[in-house]
Picture 1 (cartoon, rainbow, N blue to C red):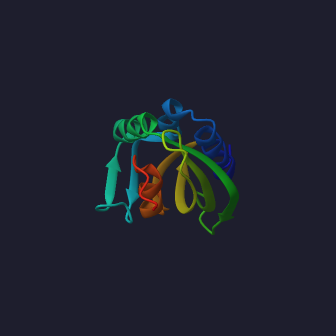
Picture 2 (cartoon, rainbow, N blue to C red):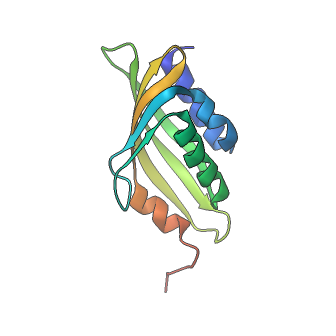
Length: 135
């Protein structure tokens, strides 16, 4: 499977809500960096840490539907850069939004060995709020 195909399959799993299967896309020693995470940057090391993060996300009220996916190949055959949007829906409040994302994936032997994830965490947090703050 090419890096592009792997990323597309990964995003399909997210859209289908298959959170429990997502960690399998990552190498045992994968590193996931989220430099724009709030309240502070996050760095996950190892598949188990990634699996815990996905398990926590699965417990939340957000449903994510990737769309407008554009995969950019690079001079490095292991690296692809992916731009996409999430249509996000809070299943508790019904709040919806669109969230922009850019991710850099390094793929080796059919698994992600490293990612740098640039999600709009402020907008995700706003959709995730349990109360409706609109007046």
